[in-house]
Amino acid sequence: MNFRRDEALLFLAVLLFFSSSIIVLSMRWFLADSYYSQGPLVLAAFLWLLYRNYKSSKNRAQPSRITGTVIIVFAMFLDLSGRYLAIETFQYFAVYFLIAGLVLFYHGRSFALKNFMLFVYLLLAIPLPGFILDPLTFDMKMFSAHVSELILSVIYPSIERYGSMLYINNYYIEITPACSGMENLFGMVSLLWFFALIQKRRFIAWIDYLISIPAAIISNILRIIIVSVLTVNGYGKFALEDFHEGIGILIFLVILFLVSLFNELSFGLPASMKSKDGCNPQTEKEKRDLLPYIVVMIILTVFSLVYQVKAFYQEEKEFPDKLNLIAAETDRWSSVDEPLPESYYRMLNTDDILMRQYIRKGSTGEDGKVYLYFFHSVGDRGPFLHRPELCLKGEGYNLLEQNDVMINGTPARRMLFSRNGRGLLVYYWYRFNDRTVGNYIDLQKILITQFAKDYDCMMFRLSRVVQLNNVEKGESVLLDFARNEMPLILKKL
Image 1: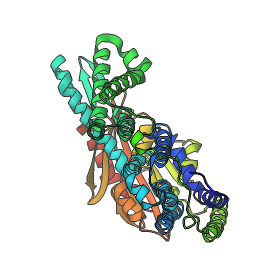
Image 2: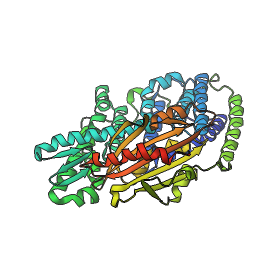
Image 3: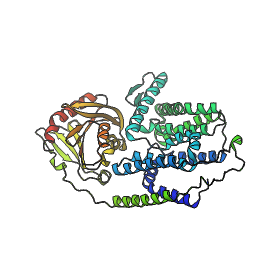
Image 4: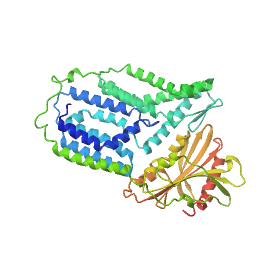
């Protein structure tokens, strides 16, 4: 896999063009709680396996310049679309198709087809979009809670489950998103698929592929069961704090060790595949002139870098704030504004943000309080790529329930959270170009078709503290506020 000077120059120009997407993907890998910390290892394993298979191949590489160029051009389209539309998922897959296109460009279709499973494996390093990953995390968490409840009921017949919380002998154990099993899932699949790719026997390789997901789920359920038993028996600090992560890692390693016992792994070149000369020399046909490709890519790279610099130094948008149009009180409710951290303004790239506490006149405590969170942006989809629940999860809240509801005939999203035994009930909705949109997914479907960026979007989020054993009582107050007070509060908008 020795590059000539012109090949190396072309390769460098391509990497510079995609530098923005490569940086975005790398940052996503190292983001806390991203479920994709294994991304760099998957990429390293892919490149090593690719080199290994290239060296062991008997067939001379036959570059597929046209096919490779088509795929790289498609990757460029994803890269530019991702940058313009602020959709990072497009940029992640731009890097993926760039790698696939380069393999075809330099080593040909036959080599890529023989190593098809390597490209499937590489997908494990590409983050899923939030509208897929977040519901999957929630469903995995609920499934793990349900199965754990069934198994623990054999030991503790009095066990009760509310959402993803287990109540056992006056102890409550919250199964958080970190305990959903997604980290185990990606980690276990990455390792077992790697075992399969270096496996000597095809039958065992397919077993590795098939058991990877069940093994991850089982390891997570065992972790929940062990943590629950230790907590109920008085070792809660050890199980939930001191060695919480260690328990998960230990179970993961035990299952991985048991799986490795029936694997026959080979890290060297398969003897039957080794070529006598190791690397076949290129023919004159394969050494075709790359000058046109180099010239085109250098021109495109220059324009790309100039665009990135301009985007970095672009002027901050100015538009009239709408938070001042939101009424501070009604006949029955007064309010107090709450300060927001500076990080909110930086993250959402707008100053039109409001956090307000509405207080029912004559009431005391949390029973008479409803919180309104509002933000508004014009011509920038970035703020609305953040799911509303992510902010609350970042503050330690655990999502228990979610569903769509209707308020005064318009759609909204209902979510129930818990933290330290207390509940938080949330309603949210969007107003996009004077059209009410009831949930995040529907908004994304609209935004992805708005290429001109000529839109005006607001988000409204109402929340209220509730008792988890009597959610209906607290919800009646929140629903009454949403139905009767919000039309008055938003009358000028």
